[in-house]
Image 1: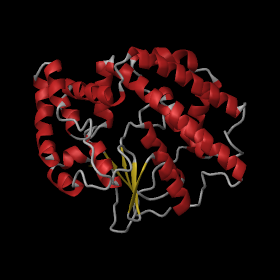
Image 2 (image 1 turned 60 degrees about the horizontal axis):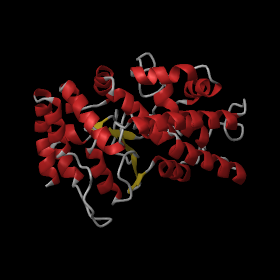
Image 3 (image 1 turned 60 degrees about the vertical axis):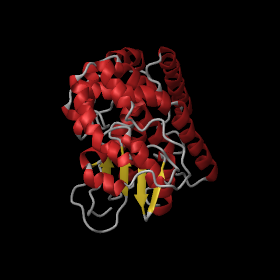
Image 4 (image 1 turned 45 degrees about the vertical axis):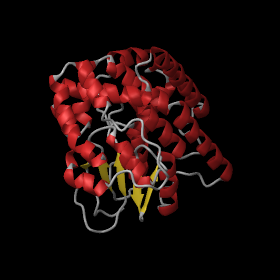
Length: 328
């Protein structure tokens, strides 16, 4: 049944371009994998191999270059996601050759993640390594630290490690969800900018249906994250400013959050602030304007030390990917 729905989704995307917005949104919502049915953990929800074979343009997009047959990690990710950026940055910092598979149609990745992780995760990123599939960016970094200890992200000192992991958790929980909600809230209020972001970051069929892609994306983010709510957006602004306050307090005019070298706390804070700051080295080009509402919100923050720290951290520490087949 799931594969049948995949077969119908491209038809619905075409209808979204021709129908009025309300009707298109209702039709698409009926076919989004939300909410997911209750299943036993470990029960396959989607045969990803079949889905990818029949509908490669819907399931994922291969970012790999110079691929070889040798085993290597594979990161399943969402190009624009700041949590995916956190996982990508960790892989690149450690100079680990790997391949990347980007979701083509947001929403399908939920089923794919549940299937790949046997119910342990319901979103991307997911790292496939040594026969394991690990969801959640924090767990991905922990596994990378175990498998690839070179260029460590965890401090060696136990007390510093405890503090670094506590800060990672703080930014994961108190910044990441709120900045995601506000970014999509303001994109929903700026359809022209939303369409430009989709065209730049989303492979597959969504890039070819113009305003229908915006209708789909607004429906998906509204259902998934509740981004339409003005009250939730107001709370998100408060949380983002509070996270910036915490960042500056922890830095205390220093260069790094914990110790005297770049680590997991720095990576997490910078990656999760990227949708606000839009550094040149981030997933979205810094010279492209944010949606109007987000630009207005960030204007008084641009001269703050924490905001400039994010820009500088990306500039100094955001390593380029290591292609598959290259030596780390």
